[in-house]
Amino acid sequence: MPRTVLDLDDELLDRASKIFGTKTKVATVTAALTEAVNQAERASFIDWLADGGLPDLSDPEIMDQAWR
Image 1: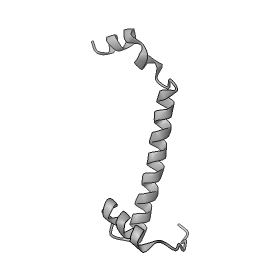
Image 2 (image 1 turned 90 degrees about the vertical axis):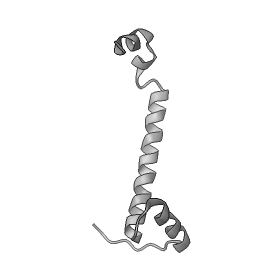
Image 3 (image 1 turned 60 degrees about the horizontal axis):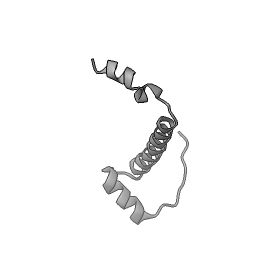
């Protein structure tokens, strides 16, 4: 993995490390990036659902059979 030099806001990094429970700068940045990607993917999935991604969920007949 290549090394990257970043200028980070120490106060923001400290706050993030408390939120994520991380002990190192690398772990904190990795956790923050992971959370940002996961949040974007969840939002995309919700949009997909809202656009009819699972049409069977709105079909009462199919859903009635699912609970039997």
